[in-house]
Length: 208
Image 1 (cartoon, one colour):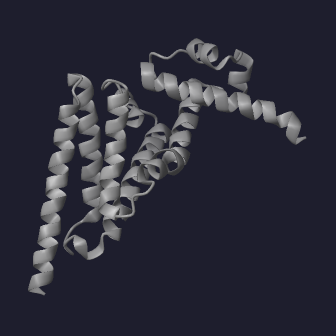
Image 2 (cartoon, rainbow, N blue to C red; image 1 turned 90 degrees about the horizontal axis):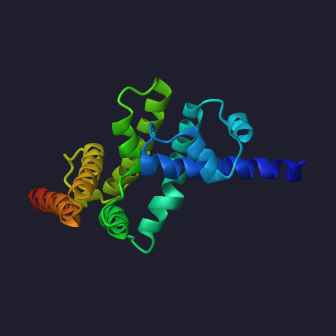
């Protein structure tokens, strides 16, 4: 029974993986079903068996991003990094690495989809939001783990959202200018701000 079902799972995973890549490289609207079939080496019957409509495939791609957040992005970026604040900047360094490797062609796939899909159906919007929420929650947890190194009045969830804005904006500008300096400038300003927050925490502790 398990052996009979294994090839179907493999085909589905291959279709999702190729759709993910093509949506990132070409955009959702510019990627045709034929593009996906050709890249996945699958026939239309197989694709429509798993995904009756193109949007169903998009939802599977978005689910894949949610499932892969920790094993494919956070864990590799944080390997060997114990300090919670340094983890935040190690994550941003991972995006810098991807920009360098692609000559500043890399763009955050979720950010690109969110910008392209101006009026997504509610279920698509919810899954995009869940992806962003998962990212910011991981960063917020880092800022929470920093404890009294950051001031007590700080809204750490909002700082995590600001970190996401810094990353997305830095990536977008680096892609536009084909220059890593724009990404570096954004991250540098965020690092300066976090350093100021750490100084404020020290002053708060001294005044207690």
